[in-house]
Image (cartoon, rainbow, N blue to C red):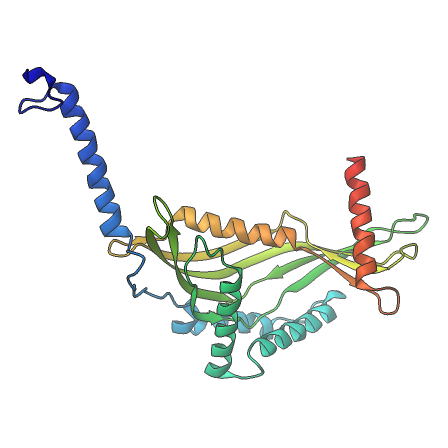
Length: 295
């Protein structure tokens, strides 16, 4: 009669093995739940990361000395570097609503926060809070201008290449939470705090003049996909137990930035009075379709 019971006071080896596995799973769930995750309804005070420039003004000083103390370049790209710096300064000013100091930085911070929350995947990320931003003070520099192929006797337009280098103090500090929707919606949240700063961006820049045979002539500026990108990322993950500077998170962020630059690394400028943007876009799509058919 006693052999009909599933469990007894003297369990068998199989029963003991099952109980041991269940206890390990329950213990693992409790550790994850109460050490790293937070319940969805609780408010977590995240520890914001601030860019290095907030506490170390010498970081700005190094970039400023590099820009002001350098002698003018001997090549024709020097004029373009002056123009590029002025264009970047205009973008910085407009991002700050032409304000300076703390007020301007606060305006830029709010704009970046609103834009980040418009783009975030709402099913996976909680509200993104931007704690601080550093818009930098330098601009990309071009050098070593060269003609890749001469169009004399050839229908293809002349292609010009530059070497571009960009070093700056640009950075952003943010916090959010990764949402876990299993086994139920909003089961738990994993708090994440990040500071992302640019160390170096180097690439070739290819400039292709418009073709006279084109319906809508465009000036094409493009970046190859073999560029150099060095980002510095500091991170904190978890609620009560903190995981600092996870390498996989750094790799994921750098991969996503590289992906965006590769997808949007081509700019086409329609010549004034030579066609509309829609016509140029239609011609580009036709060329891409023709190349896909040949491939």
